[in-house]
Image (cartoon, rainbow, N blue to C red):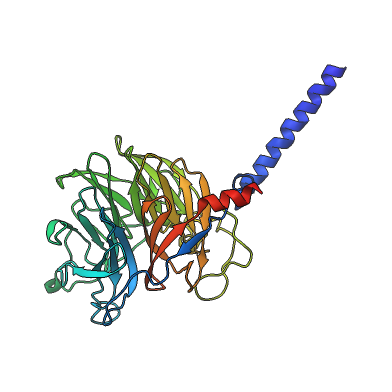
Length: 387
């Protein structure tokens, strides 16, 4: 009798535990998995970038740091001319490691239309991805163009913006439609997230020769993408794609050119969280897959970057509640920081992150027209959590 009673109790406890886990998974924020995520203390370096008296940044869409510690900002700024829907808005400015202005790169370039992202490769070449012209341009350290991908529509052919239709038109190899970002695997292969219309990743070898189109438009299965908005690779050749419209990060195995897993960021949102401007948003994640509001839902990745070094970390940012998340490469959220707003240490649509080290990162903000240099203090968070 005693053994039967003990077995019954064990079965009851197992069933109860399973029910608790299932209930937790059904909730929007997966509280059992995420309640231990700490807030990371950090500082924003005041007035870090020293602009000349006659220069202002527009929407800061991109930021990158080279091996010398120089900061490059891709901005929709003073070059903006023409009407609202046909403006030219792309400039790249270089600052030294102290924030002093150095020069403008690619002034008046034919590819400039609507800035989106910039990245440095391992050889200190700077790559600019222009969403408006559908072009990706490589600059050598001297600032000269050495490689070009894509081609913009000709002015003589009554050029118009791409039409976005449902279902999306199939991608055309050799052509981009509003590309967003670029990265490289350890072999030097090139990955371009493409983008707002095609929703795929285009892969080329180090010489610029075509290899593969990876992913397709979609809302649910692994490998389906809805606005791949940012992209980064780790030292092992895994490629992390910010699948913003599907509120997840998807990972490509560079050896097989297949998507192999997904990462979702589910961290509780404070009840007083507010957007950068306007009425408070719902704290609930839409339940309909691919709903348009997923772009601004908590945890929807707008920007990703991966730190160098023997232990690499993934940083990601969302637009609401406007936070930056630190993750291990297996997808565990290790901490978060910041919120939406106009002040220092607050963010207005982080569009790109540069992370030259684990505890020094740079964020380019669309809505606040600025770049912030952030210094993280994760040991302070650990000390507070241990008390």
